[in-house]
Length: 108
Image (cartoon, rainbow, N blue to C red; front, side, top):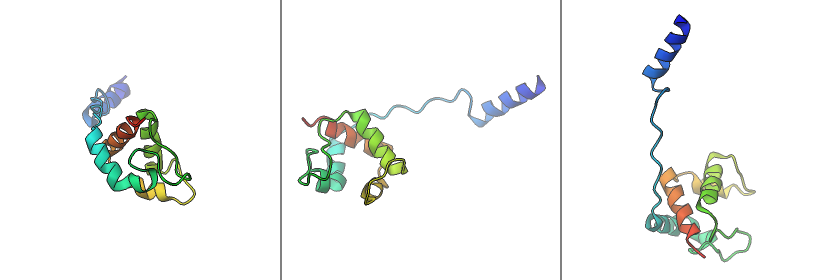
């Protein structure tokens, strides 16, 4: 019983137990548009439908789907043949990713 109490005490004092979940990120479409212009548009176009058919169309995709794919490229969980997406996503923050995903999801 002492061991259980000790472990519980350590968890509480180290912040693992009863910690507050991070606040959800509120996407900003205007900020997403600016980031798309700076990072994504050369391949995917400003509307998510790039000039080269080798790059997937992102317009109208669900924001949650896009966030997962971008995050997976950034983490290396998902790769592409030339590795460009790892490089393109390397400096994106979680807020940037949410903003980009929301922006492309609004394009029809």
